[in-house]
Amino acid sequence: MAGRLRRLDRVAFRQQKWKSSVSTQAKMPPCDFVPEKYESYPYERMQKIREQNIVPSLRTYYKKPLLLHQGHMQWLFDHEGRRYLDLFAGIVTVSVGHCHPKVTMATQKQLARLWHTTNIYMYPAIHEYAEKLTSLFPDPLKVVYLTNSGSEANDLAMFMARLHTHNFDIICLRGGYHGGSPYTLGLTSLTPYKHGVANGFGCTTTMLPDVFRGPWGGSHCRDSPVQTVRKCSCTEGACLAKDQYIEQFKDTLNTSVPKTVAGFIAEPMQGVNGAVQYPRNFLKEAYQLIRERGGLCISDEVQTGFGRTGSHFWGFQTHGVVPDIVTLAKGIGNGFPMAAVVTTKEIASSLAQNLHFNTFGGNPLACAVGAAVLDAIEEDGLQKNSEDVGTYMLLELAKLRDKFEIVGDVRGKGLMIGVEMVTDKDSRRPLPAEEINQIWEDCKDMGVLIGRGGLYSQTFRIKPPMCITKRDVDFAVEVFHTALQRHVERAAAK
Image 1 (cartoon, rainbow, N blue to C red):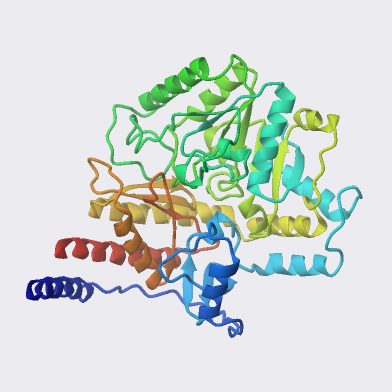
Image 2: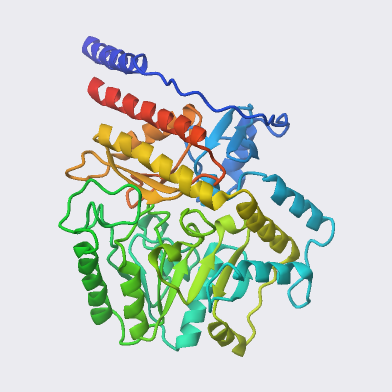
């Protein structure tokens, strides 16, 4: 008994040692917004309702889940009035800022006029929005089908590709997330989202061209202000890693699917998998191979679209390609449930041979919200802000990668950023979950909310509202720096 008490004393001493040695100097940037007083149920009753009345598959973040009450631009406020810098944006959904005044005003105006009627009638909002949205796409991508969610959009894109080509098989990349419906789960290649039931027939995965964790790639391969520290034999303009991954792609086409396919779907940069980027020109060559087999190329822009990558409005433009079908969701409505499929008139006509109807897709309220989001992106200069602030943040995070052995990779473009955590840079083994959890919790306790992703949930996902500032970045990076220092001290105290 005495020995056990001595061991507990040593543990308590070590914990006290690291807890008292590192404190953050980060000062949260000021915010003039004052949230309303919280007047709903007490926290404990909310927890009870969550346990009894909400399905357990809808999990919460953090040991003590946040009870969020109000939002303003890049800020969130909990039930006690505490402010947080939101670097995850409702899972990459709040594009222009929480409760953005332009979007709020447009929504209120439409609410007072007409909430809903179906698209069997003509009404101004759907026509105005369709014209505004498709004007942002290159020819021949000029026809839109409005839906309610990203899963629904990708589901429809698959259906269109099969109808138009009269083929069935669709290729997707390992590590991709394209939805949770039974149809799209065949495209989603992340084990935590897979259930032990039949889903997504005719979907074949191929090797993910990940230049950090994959077998090939390194410091010359990706379109990012920050390259991986992993060395490779590639040179500027000659990416040998891309060639190797294309050979794997060809191998899949030659062994796993028929001679003709319906299509290929890929995110321009993988979102749920932690901002994984492919070697330059990989998508361009993959598209060509698919088209040679009669297939269509689908770009899943659910997370990369609407200026988030900074240099371009759509993620596919960063790869120098024009897809046949584009799917949109999340940031399209700044949190309002809406999505879209944009394609060519010819492909869209394949769907017109029979009825295909969507009750809520493109309703007046959704279209008013979507149009206001596009206006806010343009008027507030949010694409340029994504490029400037995102590049600044990537470079600042790269300094932490160079300082800490557990920060294996910093990557991304614009305000779509991944920070992959490892035990050490040589092995690239994922940092254990309990260690990542503590860093994550520390950031939250200091006022910064970030996401998680990756095959092993080892990557921090940073995808904030596109209105954040460099001052916000300085605060967030300092908080992350402090959390990493605390991790180092915890490890030393063991």
